[in-house]
Length: 399
Image 1 (tube, rainbow, N blue to C red):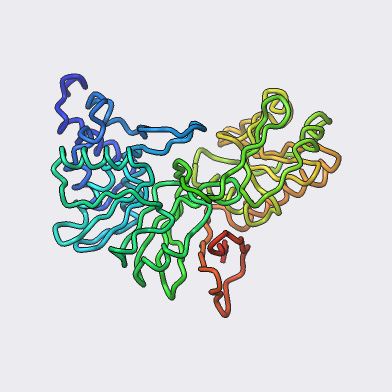
Image 2 (tube, rainbow, N blue to C red):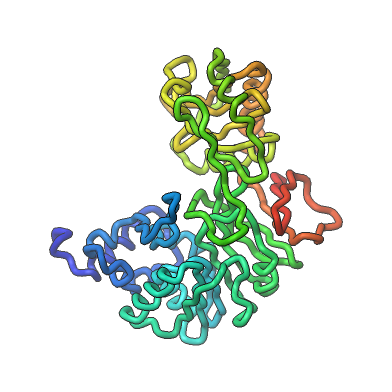
């Protein structure tokens, strides 16, 4: 094998694809696109050996440090393209531009298909144009526009792919997607982001794939903002825009003694288990967010460290409880609960009960997520937890 510094871009590209395939198969068409599109031309300021690493490259950040332009991690792109199921001749809308993803989509759609790539940032679109020109992809339409409204002039689309976290599903996405079409949305709900693949049937979006991928937040005036509140000693709590937090009361709670409880549930090294558990807690708990403890609240004890990165947490006006990892059992780590505040025993025990319920009834399962446009409700919807978004309703159902 050649040293990385001496390898050609084609060799580096094929090595990247082999690493992706080692983690699991991908469709032949996706593999062929990954082997063909020159990723290094979309990252011209990086050495080729860096461009072909399996990592996201941030191109631009906003004033808060959030990425507003990036070229996504190749393995994540491969998984999203697999879930999107692009076929030759299809019309595709990409919301959030960077160039590399659009070039892959164009390869999958072929000469008879079309790709529109939309981004709110003019500088990102200008860069996308230039990279696509250098790479020889002149048939892709890259435009400045607010992704929340899609691009009606080229609608309808067979496939829509959203590459930024969104706390809403705008009506235009429903309207511009054909019946039977597929859309991938990094849905930010109750402090969690899950990238979900949906099919539109009867005007309703129904999921068939859920992955733990997260991206930068959607930009634009009027987009609901995720909220991060700072508590005691640098501890932070990420919550959705629809959830209230009494900061002073929770700061006071974290100064009180803590209540710890083991659940008896063992978490093995499988990220799909935590993906399933967090979605279950999002449906079972009245509040849910992601807590980042400080060193004091994460001190050693019967239940030791919080689940990284951040930890699922629930709270009331004056009490907070969150998941933590206990002692190693040889096969994994026991999930436990840490709770602070005047009602720490009740809230902590309730959270532990819900973890045990997941372990008994839903471990290894993922729910079905239905998204309804405002004003549309099924006559006999499946049982589950319904969440109101600004433009839609989300139903999480465990069957």
